[in-house]
Amino acid sequence: MKRIYRLYREEGLRVRRQRRKRLVRSMPAESRLRRADQEWAMDFIIDGLASGRMVRILSVVDAYTGNAWRWRPTPAWAAGA
Image (cartoon, rainbow, N blue to C red; front, side, top):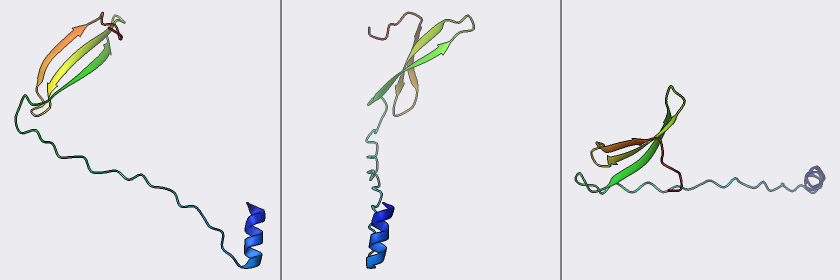
């Protein structure tokens, strides 16, 4: 690169520098939820007890109100089941 830069400078040219491409992100679509019970979100919460056992909790939440519908803890859910 130094050699090319030197040759360009001797000829009075400018070295082209590549501009960094920027990620163009679109704005998220506005929520089309108008009332409760239209959309639900599920998530697994994993926590460890003082005894050392791991507990998985399945939480189901209403996306409009944010109210939790059900929490079901169990120590025996397998990841592939």
